[in-house]
Amino acid sequence: MPETIVKLQDVAVFQNENLVLNNIDLEVKKGEFVYVIGKTGSGKSSFMKTLYADLPLKQGTGQVVDFDLKTLKEKDIPFLRRKLGIVFQDFKLLPDRNINNNLRFVLKATGWTDSTKMDEKIEEVLNKVGMKTKGFKFPHELSGGEQQRIAIARALLNDPELILADEPTGNLDPQTSVEVMKVLQDINQNGRTIIMATHDYALILKYPHKTLKCDGSKVFEVIQKAI
Ligand SMILES: Nc1ncnc2c1ncn2[C@@H]1O[C@H](COP(=O)(O)OP(=O)(O)O)[C@@H](O)[C@H]1O
Ligand SMILES: [Mg+2]
Image (cartoon, rainbow, N blue to C red; front, side):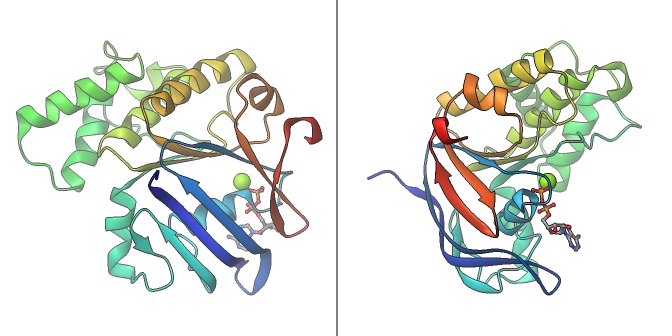
C-alpha cells in the first residue's frame, strides 16, 4: 500500500470568516503528481495555504505528511514546513546574496551546521535542477526560469515528503514554463509527491496528471476532456 501523504475529510477553507471551499475530500498518495486548477479567486492558493498551515484548519479533518492539521499548534508549524518544499509564483530569492548563500541561509535556518555537508547538499540540489554552475550568480543575474529552478532547488534542500507549488510558472513565458515543468516532472519521477496549483491549461495537456478543480466553493476531480 502506498503511503498517504495528504488526507482531507470534509474540509472547509476560510479566508477570515468567508467560506472559500467546502466539503473537500482528498487523498494523495506518495509519488503522485496532482494539479489544482480553477480560475483566479476560486481558492487554489487558499487550498495550498491550508496544506502548509498558513490558514488554520477550522472545519473537517486533515493530515499532511504525518501532521494532523486539526491539532497542529503554532510551534509545530516550522516542523511541518520542514517536511514540505514550497514554491511560489514569485521566486522569493534573497536579492542581496548569491545563489549558494541563498541556499546556505535556508540550511542554517533549518538547523544545518556542518559546512562541508551544506556545500554537498547545495551542489546536489543545484545539480537536480540543472543549475550547478550558477551558485555564484546573484538572483538578478538569472532569468525568470533560472530563478524558479533555484527556488525549486531550495524547496528540495530538506528532502521534503511533499512539494507544494502555487502557480510556479505563473510569471514565465510558455517555453520557460515547459523547462520548469520538466524539472518538476523529473523530481516527481524520482518518487517525490507534488501538488501544483496552476491555470496554465497548455501545461496540463502536455503533462497530464490527476487534476482537481476549484469551482463554486467545491474541489472535484476532472478528466482531461472536461477541462
Ligand atoms: N488574505 C486574504 N484575505 C481575505 N480574503 C482573501 C485573502 N486571500 C484570498 N482571499 C479571497 O479568497 C478567495 C480565494 O482566493 P485565492 O485562494 O487566492 O484564489 P486563487 O489562488 O484561485 O486565485 C477569493 O475570494 C479571495 O478574494
Ligand atoms: Mg492563487
